[in-house]
Image 1 (tube, rainbow, N blue to C red):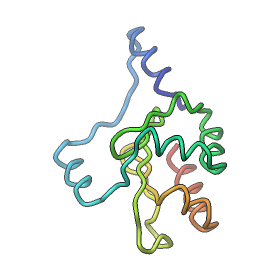
Image 2: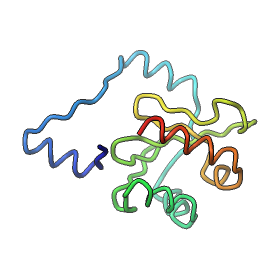
Image 3: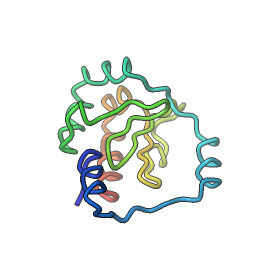
Image 4: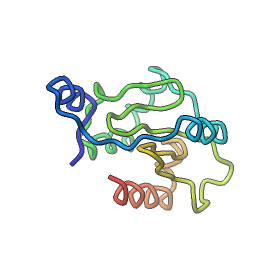
Length: 129
């Protein structure tokens, strides 16, 4: 069962703890340093909301745009964070990855243009959510 960030906060306030995996900070920092993510802001989020593919993705996650928050290098979608990378060859086998509730993919523009990436994105999401 998946819940959004608001639901998670409400359950936490009521004293209901939810199990989440935690990672070692040093391992997480090492993996963050090896991957460069595209910068995110409220301006880029507004641009993303104009893309049908992005709004369709939010609909599939039962999220509204108000529940999505831009951070420095990712978009916080509640129970997972979506990181976008600038890749030279987006059709490599590991273009879309899932690590510790982090979805790492090429930009939404690139995802919406290439059917092979869309398929890889859906397979990744179905295996991890």
